[in-house]
Length: 333
Ligand code: NAI
Ligand code: ISE
Image: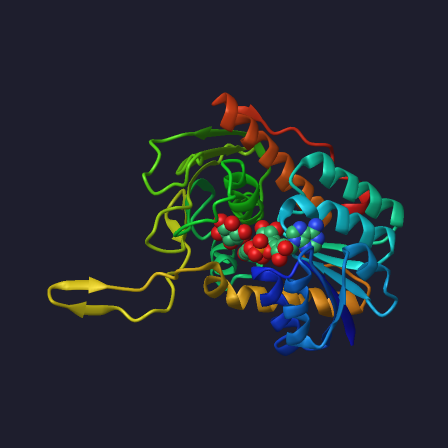
């Protein structure tokens, strides 16, 4: 049994607590913490766990074998570093941290610990749709990939969601998933700012058009539109030399009525990727029990964050910004 402590008991924290308590085999949530004690108390009631005032106290509990970090992105680095320094396995929701410098610190700490401890919650790598698209690309049935078109649309976002979060909270999913999908590295990025929707909250630039070029010359367009109102709409089409491959539609009924054909769109991330979260956390738990990390590593978190930093820079300059990162250490090869 893997005894897990969860830091951050908000939306996905509670989802993962329920998952680790009732869906994933071989795990038990034994401790929770949140800066708002009431949130921690409510979460603890779901799983009969101890409540800690701080993440540091939770990590220090000898009963906690492994830590799940589901606090907001800006708070991840502190908890992940504490868990690594304590030699505990840690599953950290995306992003690993909100700057490449913090991710680098985590990478250094993990290498100093001499063991792989960190997995990042890039769950799209576990989604059956993305996996099917990757199989087609890898089999080279359609020749080499040339272009990728993506949309990442949310119906709305909280009032504290900022223009920069469109990169390190939202686009970070595509940043990780796409280079894995097409097996290439990013060379440069640019952000273009279209007309702002009247549905964006004050101060938020929404939508945004992000352009990424890989070292192999593949061009990616990513529309991030987080106040789109109509659904949680994730699309991805890879254009190859002799055909295209697209993320499958959701299995919803197609209705013909009154001269129109319609099908459903998910309204939130919880349902859209529910199966992927289950597979991801089961895989994490199975490997954590064997002292291993098989999913996205701290180095993957670093790669995503270097790319995100370049996109954030381009949000301000409007220019094409280079993506420059350190060479991969042997530890992560
Ligand atoms: P949320 O705002 O609903 O919950 C965050 C919780 O953390 C709150 O209860 C807050 O009180 C608590 N908190 C804040 N600072 C803390 C600290 N220093 N230590 C402990 N707790 C702290 O946010 P949500 O939506 O649950 O997101 C949490 C993380 O999960 C974010 O990194 C987000 O990007 C990620 N996420 C990932 C998703 C995915 O599809 N993989 C989907 C949704 C969120
Ligand atoms: C949220 O944190 C997620 O991870 C969702 O998957 C994403 O669609 C949303 O934009 C983020 O805020």
